[in-house]
Image (cartoon, rainbow, N blue to C red):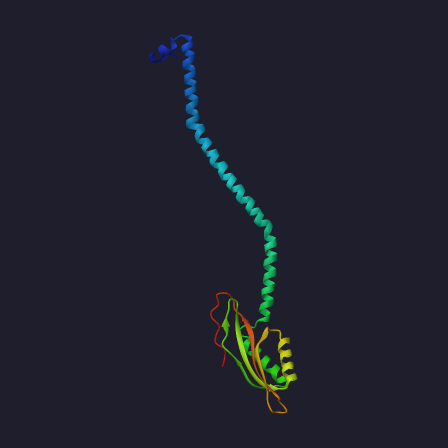
Length: 199
């Protein structure tokens, strides 16, 4: 194969110059290959390596969360059980009329002469509503004790907030009491305000 005349100076050059030109040509080819092929591949490899490290960290975190998932589920189940137990002790709005009747019946069964049993408007808190109940009754000391014992045995939470006892000249009912009881209704977060208690 005959080379074009442009290459004659290279072909006719002395051997040391041909070696230098060959080395320069080879260096040019290697540099061009590096900058045009290998350098972009290195950048891509670095990006993939960084992405791989990030994914490895996320995977390790996901494995830690998965390992704790069983423990979290057990804790959630225990908390739900506690909430359900507490909700069982707090009447809902629908259960309140029956609950009021039960409390009123406790006074009558204890032998008290109940002259007033009046639920008041509830006070809304975060997860519950406090419902005060005013009870005016007449009876003996033991009858009042029996009434409070019956109220304490109710499955729902009821507490005595205030109690005023006064004596009176009636042999059958020697004492008069003004008692403020408080019961509570469960109020889920975000629920509308509680309706006003019946008067």
